[in-house]
Image 1 (cartoon, rainbow, N blue to C red):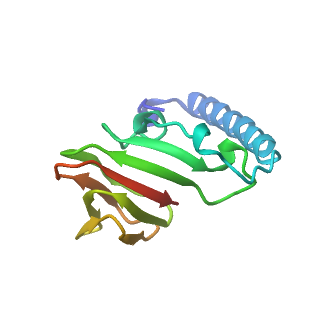
Image 2 (cartoon, rainbow, N blue to C red):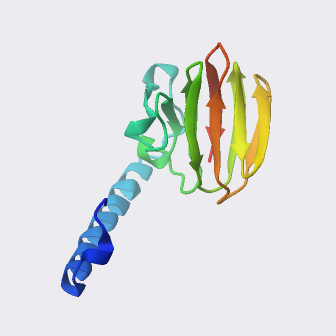
Length: 151
């Protein structure tokens, strides 16, 4: 919703809320349906890289690959697992926040910004991003960076 809600009349605000609640309710039912598939396995051939902007508005040239999530038919409520691919010399959506996240760096190097702190990371490293802390990933290096993340 991109409109300025402060400009809505009380009736318009109420109507917008009802539409949003209806949408959330329908989304919850679809998530419940997909979770009922109770998947346990995803094959490498099923994985698909998509532009991050299709899933998360914080990404510019970043690509994401959903691995384990309710959208994929796994009976899981509060953990999502995905891969992130950041091309060389790319800003990766600094800053945003969400729940706790753990990242494992599979390839390349990156710089993680977590709150006011900066960490240079490379393949083999793990990092924890606490819930509700502003953070972002940059790849100022010459090789791509691939990250496995759980959030």
